[in-house]
Image (tube, rainbow, N blue to C red; front, side, top):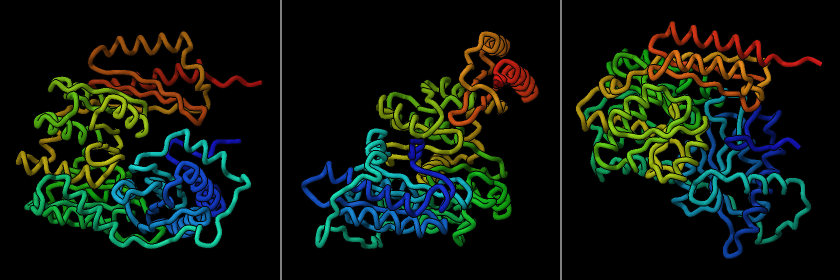
Length: 452
């Protein structure tokens, strides 16, 4: 049987791969696993979703499954993934459920479970849930079935939490800042402007008119053109774009230049290092983070640990080392003293606070790192399991020697496709492009799929 859970819950085409039947089964199975571990109270689950039209029927199905198996459910409505994580902990819930496909296009949707405390459910419990699907079970009846109610205070409580992380109770730490916020027509469309305005910023909002069909459509962190235009048009100090479930963000400075996740991590790492708040003077990034980030932070006395690509691997390394800042080039930034997952709005607030505290523009703050030209070439239809081929290894070593300390080479086999990714960073774009395509040719030649 193919595993239902991927690296970030269950995700796929809504009503074809992620169906109401699957949502119902997952809700029942999750409740049964939960009830086996809890015998001193009736379990409580909080459920939130993004703005996709499919979220309505998937929410209904998963909630029906949970309640039919004896779990009380609090409906949070449309709210970001990190808000569900925060409220899972704040409300002392036993389970959090998010219905979202994050930055994926509208036809997709997903189901993600969070454990007590708002942390991602571990592989062991995901396996238990999968194993419980379809099993015969004893159904509760009468008063033993779960209750379902709407929790109306969730958005306000989450917004207040975000502002409180800035450390100025009752104040307006972002007074005087003019910012554009692109909400991707997604889960942050209401709470995003609310939080930034509560912190004192003047907010121009775009991408905040969800209709169930337009999430991530030409807006948000995967489509920055509208944000760049709005920042320049309104003369804003900066702009931030979150994705559909607001667990990541990218930024734009006052000139319209993009500030990516690596630059955002550099800004926050240096800020936390300056105040002594960066645990062990260490940032956890991924192998895809730009060498310029490592060079800039190393020069400032900050260690950069590199995890595999994926926020779960960043979180694992942060937890193992007790570190409190990590993230990805894509804008998924984790400030673990304030959140258990990436949080785009939290990230935006703390970058804006750094602008205010230092009196610097976002362009100046982002300029602390020199982003090396990075070229990524995907080589399809190859045997991703043979990247240890002698001639390929030698070609990679030769390219690395050619670059020395001024660049780097990375080969990444896809986890799901017959594809190998070749990434090269170099002092110039031309050099990076030439080396990347040279290595791609070697990958294509040496790892060609063997036809039988």
